[in-house]
Image (cartoon, rainbow, N blue to C red; front, side):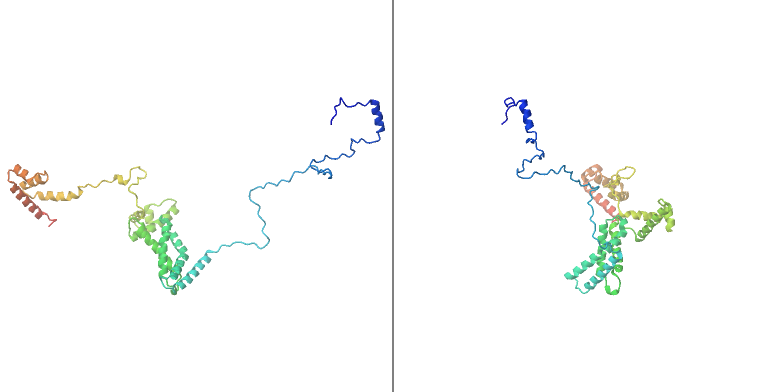
Length: 343
């Protein structure tokens, strides 16, 4: 309970000094010579006071890595392991060895059985790199490489069916001409829009090779006389070869002309005249009509050019209809006899 200062008993100054002299040697119970640290409210009174450890240092911060790449762990001590790719010659030798083994199995199997089909398919799959190597020689033909590989695979299958391992010839040596020949046959028969003679096709290959050599030599596109002099052929043959080389791809009739901006070739072509087929017949009839008498010529003109009936013709000429009919029949007989085409 707190007593206000105005109601507390006042001690005289003299008594206060005497009290101080009497208690001068006694310590003031209100003053603790050994001050204790403030007690934690959550601490029990009977427990020893907690020692203040002092200011706590800041926890160490992890240094930021310079990059986001995690540090590589050190490899355990030991011999270094390096990967050495298998050389191409080793893979080729493995393929040849596998091919010989498969052919040895294939000759003992009966065609048409499941085991024969399986071994034959394994042979085809093992020698597909040979087909891709042969097809790479035709990259400049502007044909999809997948189509060329498929055609070469047909040649590979034919070579597998005809190969005899007892002759002592390696299968790649036997199969390569068959694969290349199948691809060349495909380009000769199916790719060209217009078929060209074989000699002209072979000469076109030489013209292309000479053009590349002269372009590298002079730094420009060679002229026709320079190519002809290089191959020792005439300029007309060079021009024919260049035209033959364009037979691989046909130009669309609807394509616009480059440079001049003119419409397509189809828009500039004339239409077919329906009367064109009768030109020869009209000329023949005109030649035969001049051989008839004048009256018969007039009757034919009135009947077939003016579309008059026999009664109208008889009224105009002043003769009977029966006579007009006889004159027409006689004119037809003369025309048939004079027509050498039907004769």
